[in-house]
Image (cartoon, rainbow over the protein chains, first blue to last red):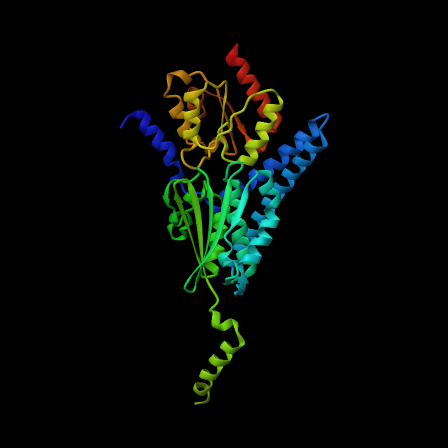
Length: 259
Length: 123
């Protein structure tokens, strides 16, 4: 192996060094803070700024602040889960309603990058068994991640699906930021280090913790330039949604209790 | 400019353009190398933490080509020098003319550094 090749490998392999959570957190917080500070300095130093430009810049500050807040809220949530302060309360959540609320919240960021979002409507009424707040954080992080790493004018596709008693939500975007192939290790907690998270963000660490707490899994895959995050969560058994279902179960259980 | 954070990259690019520079922003090291093969550039502004090949790998690859041996490079990253896997001396040897920490400089400093490097190269 030539010297040059060896050197290149050294640089590429540098990500094998474990990065502690605190370092990773600090690094993640720096980007939106740098954006807020940078745009503020631009606005302050410019003698004349058109109202349109001023408005655009203020929007960018607002989006960076939102990113920062979402990151901090996610960290607090993950911390509470780790320390047992958050009792996960799973209840039926209609995924379509949640997705609509999220897209509304992220609309300014989508407009800023001229990104379109397509939601496959076929299974949006599927009730998912999840903690609403947890699921909100998870989907916010995944969609925000897709926006962050998509080029201008990109297209994001969200596909809720159902497989027996499992709800599947695919979030797909085009981009070149991940290697091709399955990337389950990206979210593998058991490896004991955060090396693969270094390039892909703290948001995914938070996602992993929140999904695990809801007995779900998240899988990452890249296929022909399309990055797909697949979220799997339990659905609510259709029978238990209806009063008759509950009554039937109650009746069958009653003799056993009586005896 | 090789930068994978489109928000930050957009901020620097808009300031550079306002100062009269033409900016090509790419988020992938391979795309940046392909671009260099097609068109000459005056200055490379390089982020280090890139997902596929990091900035150091790009730098070493770039310096392997004779045509680009004198293109000045500005490192613009949130990594601090003490976290670099190589010495500053080696970076200078690899044609790094300025190292800026994003969180410690303003966009105006980036523009000033780019202008300085461009001027030095054209002189």
